[in-house]
Image 1 (cartoon, one colour):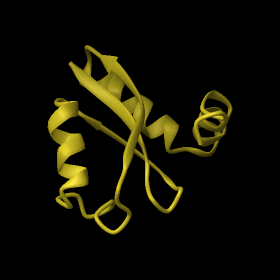
Image 2: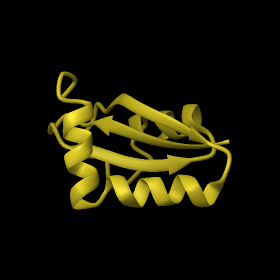
Image 3: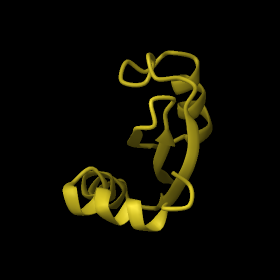
Length: 81
C-alpha cells in the first residue's frame, strides 16, 4: 500500500507527502529526520489516504501540492486547520 498524508506543522503550514509505511514516515518527521519538517515540529498527522498503486499515490500528492489541490484541502479540512 501507498499513503498520501498531510501534516499540520507547528508553523501552521501543511506538509503533503507520500510513503509506503505511514507509521515509520510519521516517526521520521517527528524525530527530525526529514529536512523539510525538522524546523517545524511538532507535526500532527491530520489526513491520509491509501492507494494500491504507487503511481496513483504520487499523482494525488502532486495534485494536493497544486493550487487547486491546496484549495480543495482548505475546504475538506476547514474545521481542522
